[in-house]
Image 1 (cartoon, rainbow, N blue to C red):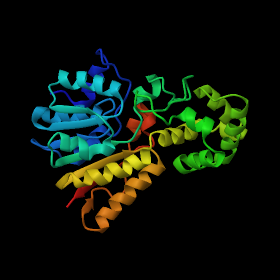
Image 2 (cartoon, one colour; image 1 turned 120 degrees about the horizontal axis):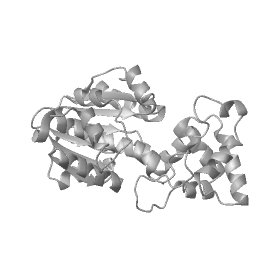
Image 3 (spheres, rainbow, N blue to C red; image 1 turned 45 degrees about the horizontal axis):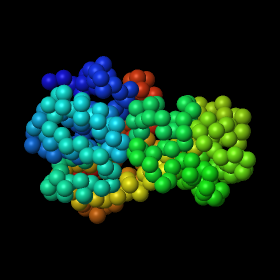
Length: 312
């Protein structure tokens, strides 16, 4: 059987191409302690890296149940997983609905739950939905291909200045949130904000020159915050952890990979509460982070943190 990383490389050569490199791949799966006969819930299927790793390690002896809001991710993953004979149910849904997904499949309990909260490189680079400030795209930032009532363009052109500023600060710690929000409101009075480059130009003109020359791109935090708001990611995380815990077997484990402080604080808080109440045991008191080697190979991994808890 081929190792997980090699499977991903092979599939990058097939018709289901992917640029995505799965972060903390070995660390996350090893810490779930799956075994033959386990049921594994992959709540954020994405490029299918974690599910492929499970399939690689256990073949069809582990049942994989995976969700994703992006239909393209589901279609691509089906091709990959079927090619290697994986035992997988792929569901177009949000992991926050884990209770409905598992109930519909007549699954009462699972042995392992994994949530990789990072945005897939495929979505970032090629979705055309405005996740990246490097391409000029419509300002949607929706995970789903289906039309949503709330998208980034709606927020930027209709929501109040104070609300926008609160989003930027609360979801990304953007220090210039007030200045950027004010500029957004002023600019939309002249013409609607429609594309990613429209937004980048507004941000560029709102922040100090030193900030524009910083190590991190000056638009990073604004784009991150808007994406989180559009997709209601923090509420989804809270619901997913809480509902998932109820479907986790005793001695089962939940592993979550976060990529920014807002997410990590929620995961840390929830896991600590479960440990304090005697319901869970923290597997790692400090988060597991990528090695220097992984960061050199995949710079997007640099902010990743993995936390794992076991239900007792």
